[in-house]
Image (cartoon, rainbow, N blue to C red; front, top):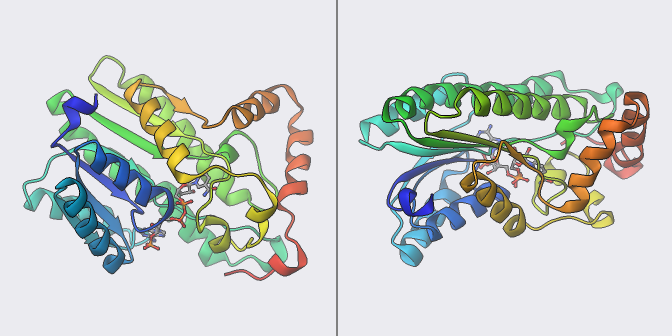
Length: 269
Ligand SMILES: NC(=O)c1ccc[n+]([C@@H]2O[C@H](COP(=O)([O-])OP(=O)(O)OC[C@H]3O[C@@H](n4cnc5c(N)ncnc54)[C@H](OP(=O)(O)O)[C@@H]3O)[C@@H](O)[C@H]2O)c1
């Protein structure tokens, strides 16, 4: 797969930090050119210069807020104007919120759905026609371990990632035999800014977590093998099996042990 994708273009959303930045680095090392999308354009510009120096990667930076309903179409129009064809779409941008119902910021919850669900769905459906026409393409959607069960105190986030997993798996099945592969990545806790932004700083220090290098390597391996989904790390994979046999009431109750906000985590970002 990577031989075919060398010198082709990948679109990576949320490439300014964490997993998205690592996807950009590992795809550049595999010889792909990159369209990098996030709100922090200056970080993307720095990254693109670095990748060009290291690997000769051609990068096109698009500063965009994917919560804006006009953003996905604007991004793809700009890409088309540049004469760029997207062979790999990495729908990675996303955020979570950990908190109690008493302190809910409704607008932030809706923004989370706009980013994690709507922008991902629109980018996927707008990129697919070109891929179908060419009879080839790949889509990698960032889901989460939280997609397998309801998660108390992180309900909207977990539900948004359940959407990503189900949507990706259905597409994977629909596109079988048409040259296009879709893989959902169900990562467990990974060392990025994610939990700080979610309002649970300090949480990561107490819980074993994977590195971005490990998760992205597993994700790209699963994609190249045409997997429907992947759960990086065998312990995490085991958890997804356990939740299938445990009662749903028990599973959601267990999640409170991990995600009930500690006193110092109670403020929302
Ligand atoms: N870390 C984990 O434990 C974990 C586990 C499972 C799944 N995930 C998923 O992995 C993905 C990446 O998360 P991460 O851990 O790498 O977190 P991160 O370091 O906070 O990165 C999030 C990325 O999304 C971008 N982003 C956020 N809001 C955006 C917006 N409105 N428009 C455009 N881009 C936006 C951010 O860029 P800007 O701020 O520059 O816009 C950043 O590049 C997310 O979908 C997350 O749900 C993470």
